[in-house]
Length: 444
Image 1 (cartoon, rainbow, N blue to C red):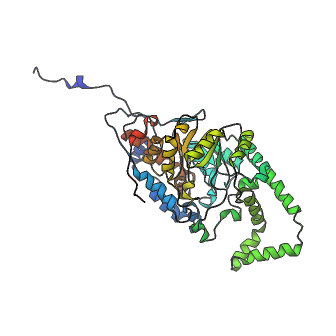
Image 2: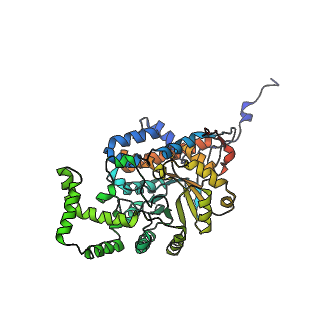
């Protein structure tokens, strides 16, 4: 028939999906004919972690500052920013790789610094380091780790790792020098300086159980293993001129505080550790705040990129530029420090829209409240170059150690890659504010 169409001639060239893409994890689950090791839903990660560890331990990770308003605002902000998908775009193969400070990474995800991981799983930061190495996700090690700088480096092998500094107070700058030298010697390439935790926040979840793991030496391993701090601590002991009776009276006073025989026994058995922990806390979390001028010291001590974590305003982003910082992490510590603060995503929108920031070479990274792949895309669309993941991977650690961390990261990587295609984008670098619709906030 003259009008008959040869269907084969209508066939078009086509692209095959990348079998090694992050989203292939979805296919792997279906083709395995069995459920994954635990849920792929972020709310279930939290629930499962809660069931795995003692209540105070979970509360330390889950808890927020005061009313919890900042943590809630972080999540609510993601609901106000909605993605605007485009269609009939060949997004079959997608580019989710990024470059930060001259290094190419396979995805935009970074594992945020989270301390005291041994309260969630005995393998602690070493399990996280191995998981990050396996998936080629950069790990940011916290100063409050329960493993030493060197132990985590060994576990991470040739993986990408950054070091987060809780900056010692000014009279202990020799400790700062020692920590940074150890980090450099162990292959940590980027220094992340946390600005919002010079004074521990009012956290009712921890206060109501009188639970601070650092008092018991947990999260002090970076300090306890530091030769300079150890020397300082021994000097403190030698310079303590109090008599035996005074020291015994102090110990007895502390032993009486728990109000139980068991509590008193625990203090007696751990007296030396508690003493050293208190000294380390006085160095690292004394309530003494640093100033912008002090950054000049870090510039002298660290020859790699320096990133400031905790920036929430364009004004402070300007100062980061003025003081020669290489990057910032827009973060409110997951709502754990300042109660009633702006949502971190709103802070990101403000900072990345600023003309001075846009015209600078400042690398902007996002943190706080990320739970899904679409959250990652929204932060990238607002101008972040990379996105940090915090609590979710720690919940994965509690649920399954290294395998649990890998599962959570695989889920987030697959979700991000999948949502990028469903948004009609070939690359995360194609994302922009034009891909977002912002719902109005309620008026005060």
